[in-house]
Image (cartoon, rainbow, N blue to C red; front, side, top):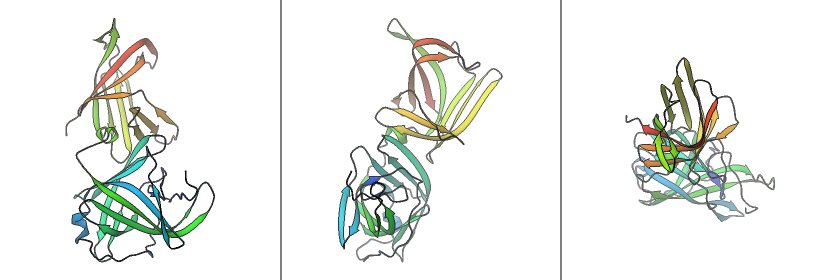
Length: 286
């Protein structure tokens, strides 16, 4: 990590450091405005789509210093015509977290507001744009504080192409369990709950539900997803301790499988068997 790497108090990457913090917050001091000549208007009609942060810059001694996005990390914004925006941030640990909010533009000022964060649109064309902000930020490694201009260059992406984390958004119903016996998967529903489902929302929250006999369980919290290990990390409301689940596999866009080594009775919570198991979840179509 470069020593001049600065972390903004937001979900954005400042000078190349992608830090997982509260989404869509940040400095709103726009002293660092620039010439808006050549930017197509209205901005709101040209800014929609999916964008990837390609690199970031901080100004030092009047010069822009570039810091590319570290490999394996990144951030995208999906800016929709309905006024909603979804940010997907992949941190250094490989987990992607989604956050959602509203977006607006100030056509006269040439600014874009993503939830509570306002940035200047510095350039904009069909395939790329730059946004900037003036603020005070501190390097978490050196303790150095820098008050200056920052900017980020973003490239347009194919909105129809989704990462596994984005594909996971939705409500999924448990259908059946399989157990591998003599090398073959056979249906195993001895401890099948009466009803079970899980919902992953694009604002980074989720809900888990199951019912077995007179026992009913429903809980919510936050979630993130590792696109490499295909594991879901979840936290419960009021509890910051994260639990990483067993890997999942997408059979298609509307079906995923989760494999594990131990099976338990949902009515008692007790482990009742071991081996190779997999659960099948099917997307609820809206």
